[in-house]
Structure formats: C-alpha cells, structure tokens
Length: 174
Image 1 (spheres, rainbow, N blue to C red):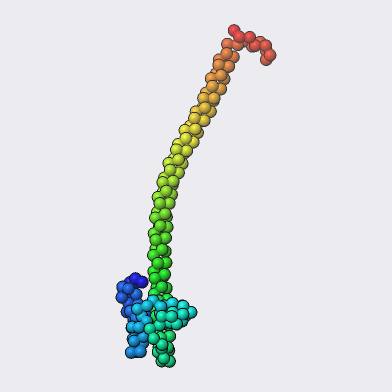
Image 2: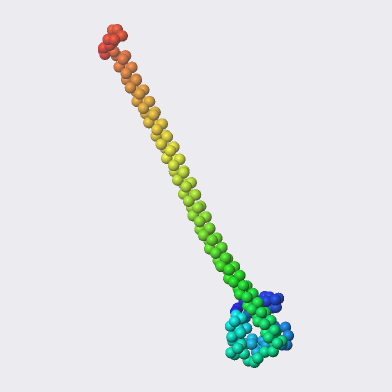
C-alpha cells in the first residue's frame, strides 16, 4: 500500500510502501519473520485461525501465542490507520477537485452575468431613446394639431371678415 512519507502507526515513521512496522521484542521479531512474509497476519480472526491449523510453520507455545496476538493487533491497527489515512487523502483530493470545478462554474456564471448586465444596460438605453423619440413625436403631433386648429380658426375668422351680417342670425359672405 503506497502512502506519502511521514509518521506512521503509533508514531513510527513510514516508508513509501506503508507502515514501517518494528517488532517490540525478540519474540515478536522471530514471529514476525515466521509469519510476516504471509499476508495472513492481516486476515480476520476466523480466517487466521483456520490458516494456522492448516499451514502454521510450527505449533506455538503460550508466550508465543500471546505475542502473536499482540503482533496481529498492532499490524491490523497500522493497516486500518493507513487505510483511514488514504481514505482521508482521497476524500480531500475529491473535495479539492469539486471545489475547483465549482469555482470554474462560478467564474463562468459571473462572466455570463456581466454580459447580461451589459446587454440589459444597452437595452435600457435604447428604450429610453425610443421613449424620448416617441415623446417628441407625440409633442410634434400635438403641436401640429394645435397648428391645424389655429389655421382653421384663422381661416374661419378671415372668412368671417368677408361675411356681411345683417343681424345675429343672417350672415352672408360678400
């Protein structure tokens, strides 16, 4: 199992290939030499007992059995610690990748928002210009109507000046 360099199980240093496991006593050292070359020390308890009944290099005496149990517990603890460490590193890498992707997506959305804000500002300016032109057109139409009304009034009065009225009801154009 490959891990980074640093501190291993129980404060012992690790190599590139996993925990650097060092037996505590000569008895553990001897047992580790006999059983350590087999991955059997990291099997479940039931599988380990079955393997020992079939393939054990020799029958163990009382102290050796206790030392082997301790050795297995320490090896399993280091294995689980290493697996946990690797899982934590893998999770951290996944989270970092997810954060990177979210940041990229955020930047893309911010660029799109800026584009939309620019477009909105341009459209508002166009709308204001159209409304101003429309107001001027309406004002010109009102002015034209007033001018037309005025012209009609002038024509009426100019016609009235050539009219000859005998009384209030009888008027004749002259």
